[in-house]
Image (cartoon, rainbow, N blue to C red; front, side, top):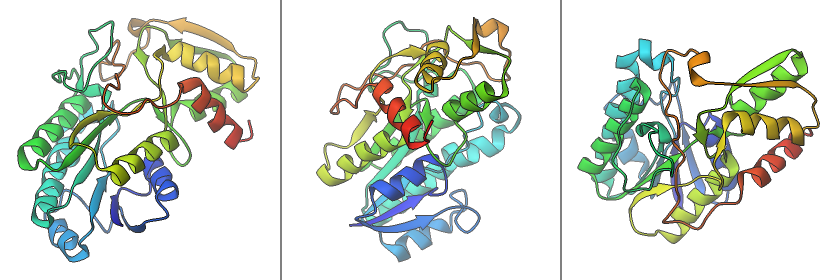
Length: 274
């Protein structure tokens, strides 16, 4: 099958290239291919893929507070352009979104059909992108995920390992909860979507198990056998430009559950020879 991956140079794009290598892959990324430029539609039509996977995004959560126009251009307007292109091609679009479309004011987590209510600019632009996608085409797999880590990209696991090696006390927020997700597990789930073509719609693809960022960090150091001085702090003690949701854990109610986050993390650390 001919698959177009937009944003292939990033962390998830790297995993998708490996997992989907049995297909005919067309790989696009900046600067040659910019999803905010409407001429990309003509390029899509000329390429004529059977499935389009959009991994491109403005993902700097704090940076989005200063660069609202840029974030909207990529996360909302660019998604609309790709959806228009897929409509012309009669091709399904797999689009990656985020838990940050929710406000985090829940104790149970969020189902696929829960209404978005973002509390920061990044989340608002991603939610707008979702809305535009659903308005323009019915042939979509809207994949929400969270806490991504894996090779070839900045992520929490690698950051913790670097801080652990540097020494000193490490302060981590203990009142924000997520479901950490390994890029290769997400990529394999996306491969199943492509191969099985279930009903179009929203899917929450995350490793199983809800955990705080502090507990996530604690498990990283435990599995890496790295003694560190770890201190739990509150969100109020950790000032950021963008407000974060308290509990944005995504509930997967429509897809076969991915493995527990602890197993996935252990595999990632083994792959790094930690």
